[in-house]
Image 1 (cartoon, each protein chain N blue to C red):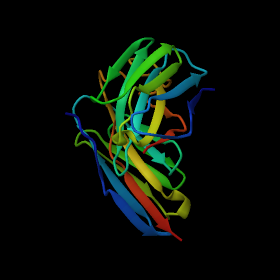
Image 2 (cartoon, chains in turn red, green):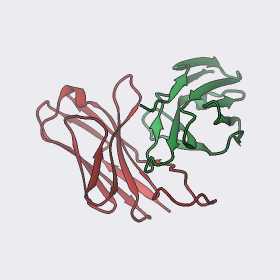
Image 3 (cartoon, rainbow over the protein chains, first blue to last red):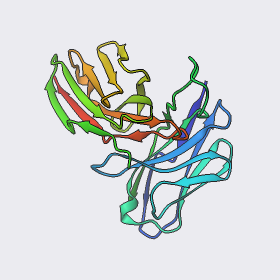
Image 4 (cartoon, rainbow over the protein chains, first blue to last red):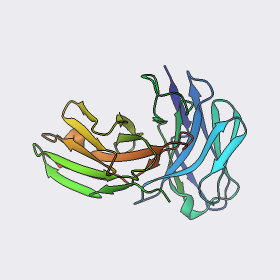
Length: 121
Length: 113
């Protein structure tokens, strides 16, 4: 079965410090990978997604970057954190899209990691 | 810009009440509609994925319906329990989305004992 891991679970960082959040997936190959953020009082916002190693798409301009050095590893980074970067960060994976519609098609269902609560002070 | 709207934003009910909430999404180029349940301090968990107009799915006391022609889905909870308290997220995917889901902001349900 597939599992998705994120760490750390919680993080408190000063403004201007760097950030590195890691996400790994087990039990599947060539997944789509996603980073989301939920800021206080807001909905789930897609930050980055990746369809393969080294392929990163950014959804919103921001202070963050993402990398995918290995097939099942997705990293969220920042060189200098801002107060507005505080929030709950979720990593997710989905099966390869574009499959023919069969009973096995996931229809883009995404599976989420446990999340990281980031507080920037 | 593709947008998914959920209403109400929040809902407070008494234990035993039945409740429902709405998700509205673009009706063109529809591929699938997902409902997730998101408890505080946990990760979202998939409830349903629906693909066909008129689909109805049920899991215990929770059920959902889908109208792709008019672009809406309803989630129903029968006999709400305190453990149903969570944020219910709706997510839409369309043909050519490369697997991306567009999430609504969710409906936060609080069930008082």
